[in-house]
Length: 136
Image (cartoon, rainbow, N blue to C red; front, side, top):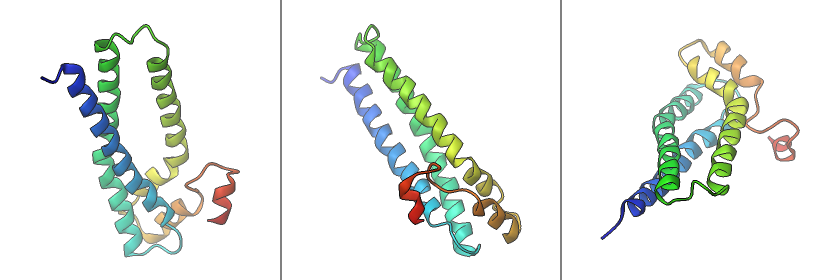
């Protein structure tokens, strides 16, 4: 008979997979947003926006089940669960910093093409000074 901890672990892993898939769709679309604004650009922005409806609840579920498993599994006295939560928060904050211009472009999806192009011209989907971004 599965225990509560087993079910929490299952939901936690399922939520991680859901978040990675949905967030990967959104992040992958950002690499394709170069060039003039077209109907494809608007479709990619819409796809990115729609995938956040799945990734946002999934990351919240990851956090809730992770904390719940930490308490249910008597791991709260250990450092690693809290360090992983702190690392998740730091990485999440860095991702929001990098992706903020794209969020603004998604919000301007109903604006004229020139406004969207201006918002997409400046940002890069990578951190500044990243060697992998120089190719883009």
